[in-house]
Length: 63
Image (cartoon, rainbow, N blue to C red; front, side, top):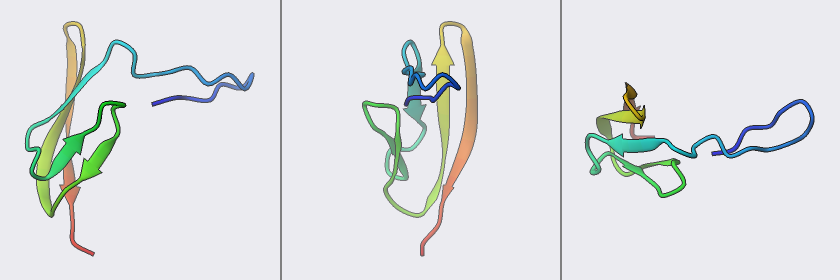
C-alpha cells in the first residue's frame, strides 16, 4: 500500500507490517497487503508491527 504526501511523493506504507486474515475462506490478504473478498461472511483482519497489533472485522456481503 502506498500513500501520497503533499509533496507528491508516494512512500510504501506497508513496509514492516504483517497483515493476516482470521478466515482465508472469506478474506484473503495478498502479498502487497491488499484484501481480496472471497465469499460472503466475516473475518478479523489483523495488522501488526513489532509488538503493536490491531484488528478489525471485515464483512463481505453478496451483491
